[in-house]
Image (cartoon, rainbow, N blue to C red; front, top):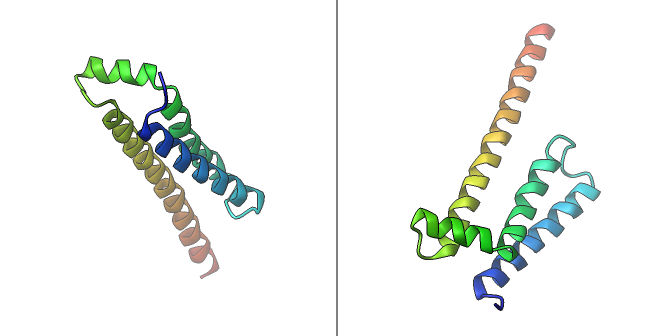
Length: 105
């Protein structure tokens, strides 16, 4: 079975995102505690787009006729998980900043 158009598009875009994340990691533009989630989020669609058989079987089991729709939903959930993680990190930093400000006052 040959590659489908959506596989090529998802693969190319996630490869570009992965390369961008790797460049940002190499230039130390992403903090140490944040590079792993970003790398995970950028590599996961790449793997999922070329290893489609288990995802197609899961889509059919769930009653989804168009398999890329499952990949789209999983991608959205992955992005939401990353946003939630980053929100927790920012909240922790805000709390630490408030404690430091109160200690100085």
